Amino acid sequence: MSDRGQLSLSVVEAGVGILFLLAVAAGFAVDLPSPPTDETQLDAYAGDAATVLASEPPRHADRSRLTEVTASRAAFKRERATLRRRVAATLGDNLQFRVETPHGVVGDPVPRATPTGTATVPTGDGPVVIEVWYV
Amino acid sequence: MTAPFCGGHLTTARGQANLLAVAVAFLLVVSAVGAMLGLAAAAFADADRPATDRHAATSATVRLVAADGSLAVRENVLRAEAVDAVDATTVVASAPVLRDRAFRVELDDRVLAARGDADGVTHRRIVTVAETTTRTRHVSRAVTLPRRTARIRFDFASASVERVRVNDRVVLASPGGLRGTATVDVSRRATLRVTFEGTGTVRLTTFPTRTRKARLEVTVGE
Image 1: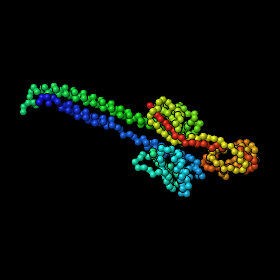
Image 2 (image 1 turned 180 degrees about the horizontal axis):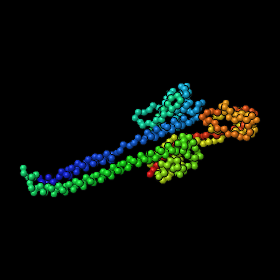
Image 3 (image 1 turned 90 degrees about the vertical axis):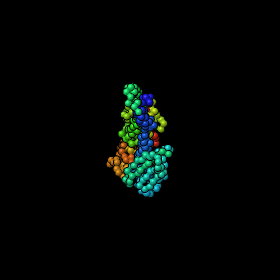
Image 4 (image 1 turned 180 degrees about the vertical axis):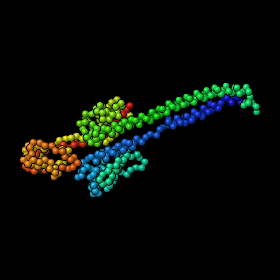
């Protein structure tokens, strides 16, 4: 009886306390949620693609390739394939993209559960939205 | 049921045992707290380093491609001569965030500048590298320039021309005929048609840029 009494409450309390501490520590040891790093890079890619398109000379007339494709529906239809090739060449092989212009869309459908980067460029005819994601 | 909770000598014995137990418990708890603090500090340091590295890499690339940076002509357009001349000092001057860090700046796998052992976060940007070229042609009456240029140089040595128009706007004029050479700043944003009023051939020099796509990478270390 006296032996049981000596397995004292203090040690039991300490044990419970240590369990508590370990539970908290386990939270650190497992992992901290990592910040969304892919999006930063993808946003940079999308913004760069927009800047490059906006500063590139057009194929026919107008100020730049971007204003050329947003000028009219006919111009967009004419330039659609070239625009696709240019954006693909700009972004490289490991990225897929979708460019939304006021007159139509170029590129692949945006996947649902994938991080994407977005850039919006205002033009005289409406915004052009470029979305980029890893293949 | 008198003993063990009410007995006189048992009470003293338990009191002694409790003191020891409290000491042991205290030791256990303190060492557990110490171990946990160490673990937490390490976890925070681990989480912190990529974040600051990422910030350094990201803002360094922003500075390097910025229009007012020492490398760039315009936003995302780097000057080829500046890219060839760049070294660690000029990189740090453009991007002070790299001052006390190891870093490596690459353009399409070619290392432009490096300092120390950079093994941390990498950030990439898409840029164009522009190289200014000169093209000279001899024109007698009119020409549409196939490639865009920021300025045009005219040489009127073998011509007698009174007026020069660019896209129907008069840019040079002299009633007795233009002499020597003249340079005119024109729009880089428009397709240009140059016409001359007069006779002879004018030597016309344009400065179109040749561009190529490239990927600018900045990797940082501690």
